[in-house]
Length: 327
Image (tube, rainbow, N blue to C red; front, side):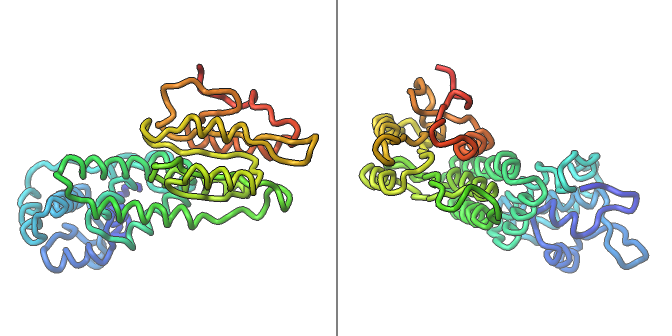
C-alpha cells in the first residue's frame, strides 16, 4: 500500500488494520478516531499520525480494553511523537500490485482476534490473488498461524477460538483455489495425500492439494489420522503416481509405514511399478531418507517434484532428478 501527498484512503487503511471501512467510519462517528483532515472537506484521507492512532486503538482493543476506553487512550497520544506505521514506507515490490505481505499478516492477525470472518475471507482471497498460492501460504498464512498459536500458548489457553477461526478460514481459502483446465490425460493416476496415523494437522496437505489443483494435477485427499490399513487399501485401489505422507511431529512419523507404502507395487504383470513417496512435514526430520522416498523442503519443491511425476514416462520413475535431503 503506498502513501501519497494527500494521505491514504479509508479502504487502504482498512486493509492494513484488518477491519472493514464501515468499522473505521463507526469509530470516527462514535469515538472521534478519524482523519485529522479531509480532502475537499468530504473524502477521508488518513495521514501517518492518523494511522498510528488507529494502530494503537487496535492494539488496545485486541488486548481486551473496551473500545471507548481504547479510543480515549489512543487519542491522548496524538500529540506525542507516534511510531510511523509500515504503510507509510515505500511499498515493498510485490506481484500484481498486492499488499506487502507484512501488512497482510498484521491485518489477518487483527481480524482473527476480532473474530471477523468476512475480513479474513477478503484478506486471504486478496493474498492468494496478489502474491500467488505459494507465497501466500509460506509468507502470510503460516507465519500468521504460528503467531496466533504462540499467543495462545503464552496466554493460559486464551485465544483458542481465534486459532480455530483463523484455521477454518485458511482452509476455506485453500479449497477455493480454482483448478486449472489443463493437466495430464484423463485417467492419469492421482497424487494421494494423507496424514500418518495419529496426525491431526491437515492444513499443509490442503495447501499442497490447492497447489496441485492450480497445476491441473489430480489428487485424492484422505485427511487427518488415516489408519495404516485404510492408507494401504487406498494405495492398492488407486495405484497413485505418488503418495504424500504428512507428519507434524517426530512422535507421529511412522517410518515403517512409509517403507511399506514405498514397497507397494501395482499394474499389469511385467510392467508393475511403485509410487513415489514424499515424506512431508517436520516430523520426518532427523533421519536419513531411504531409497524410494523424498523429503521436500518446501511447498514449492513438493509441487515441482510431483509435477515431474506426470512429465516423465511411467517407466522412467527415476527419483535422482529431484533433490532429496542429504543423508
